[in-house]
Image 1: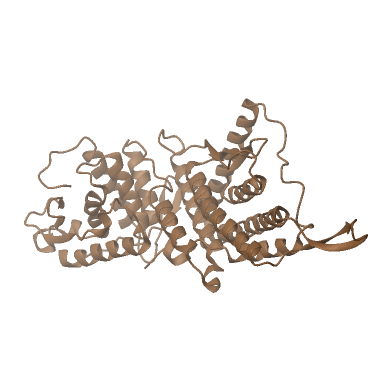
Image 2 (image 1 turned 90 degrees about the horizontal axis):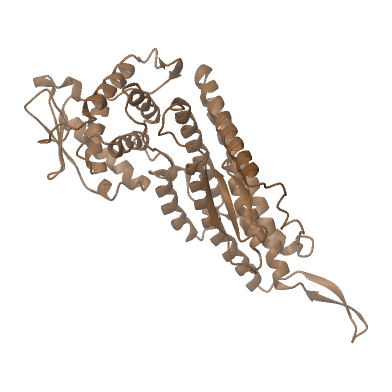
Length: 437
């Protein structure tokens, strides 16, 4: 708790939930590392124990270093150092905001209960959230911190404990953490020039998006009856102004990215806008990836067009009365480039998604594996039903065909360059997006 403050309305329930979590974690051993809750099996890993507050201080410093290295954004508070000191009393652990100090009772005065990672992270959450009381914002920050500290299963168990104590489920989606890191790294990647560095970026970024999406799907499965769980939503998105050449290829690029992230779309007849249907976290990832790849696609295409290397076609020259070779129109080359680029990006994203799903299944066993598969399948059904209802409600029956007339055969060299550019497309590296320790 925070030093010198009256008890807040949710404090008792939060403490009771953490008592549940502690009991679940303490029920695991190296020989039996799993715990079963509500018929599901979890393997959270050990809750680190410390011999003294100084050891906890080292741990807190390491967590903050990890957050900074991963580009995690907690309103800038992750950049501030936090001190850990011993306190005389044994009953409480506290955080003092003015001095940014966590106080933990040492072992000698009966502080064994407080010398563990979850307690240290509890107090660090007061600092990172800026919240004095155990509000929904504080709880969402604690869940996010557990994930960022490398304890995602512990975060899942804590969500279950909150629900068991009657606490409202907090809005915990990709926007709190993962998307911020993704956006920062996208900006860095767009400035990269080394093709060898760029080659693996896209598939690894999609792997992150898929892993996070699966984790959220499992979390949603446990909070299916709670009011606060994430639900499918629809979001309008502007592609460009009417009459701009290439809009249909822009749409195709976004559709391929959306498909790999369980998002379905309806498109305006003139390709100037579309509506994305899916879970908000997946829509956010789709937009982030699209906006980065669009910049790269257009820039790579302009470099190709400026190189002077152009496809040619044979046409009849009436003044010379013979067939002559002439460069294809710039717009034809551009559309062929975009078309091939979008196709290859979709292929790469789908490969990365399938590989990540397979790895998630291989890493799980027994009930945990079944739980993951069922959660992913339920997510797909939720989006399918939501999208089908949107089509019915809006009386949409046709199919978007604006990019059906291919330009690839008219400019095969430009299309080949589009494929190469898509293979070089980069977003981020896996280590930076995932764990840093």
